Length: 269
Image (tube, rainbow, N blue to C red; front, side):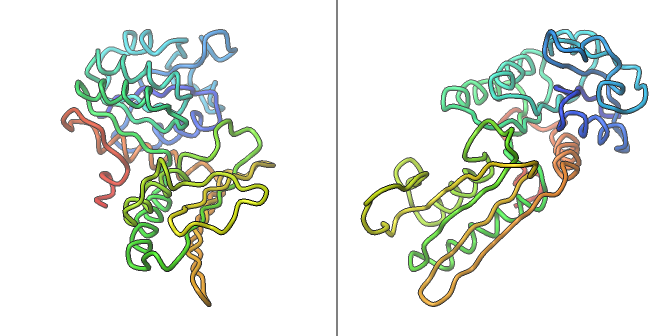
């Protein structure tokens, strides 16, 4: 039995993960958290997530949840990049595996998580969807095979409440494509165009973000050649795929050596 703690259980993503953990064979929810001061703190995690009673109380701090739960195998964290860094450090102290789906990490934050991963296995992925991760793999392969004769543009669309832009998935797509093209993501990614900017550089990889409505997530990669184009698109219509993917990742990472992992590792890509 894999004993799991879920953070942010009253949120849209957290509640879906609680449901997925509850329904997954071989999993047991033993702890839950929400931000201090929110109405969910102290409630049963099942009620906070809009489900039935699960007999797990919501704590206002991951440290408290880990202490109360006793033996914990894995924490599943889809909260905020600032909170996720602290959660990684707590998991490193307790030698508990961690699955992180938060996005928007600064280079400094990534360094802190990498340091924590020296003590415990940490899986980080901006998108836990199996389909999206296969899309990333396919985009990299197309970039390699098509070569420099095709311009690459990435367009992503999310709901109005998303706080970071571009999305972590769009950035990951751009990084993989840049790697396959031998490009430098720090220099060759273009996030905005305005005014008389001159002809498009061959080295550019464009990344554009749209926000509005309740769109869960859409990503399209355009490979634009002379006389033809290829469009690779993934549309997410619910958060179910993220939740089931995170549980799949949690099952995979338990028992792995300390280090940084991704969904590409989980899927054998």
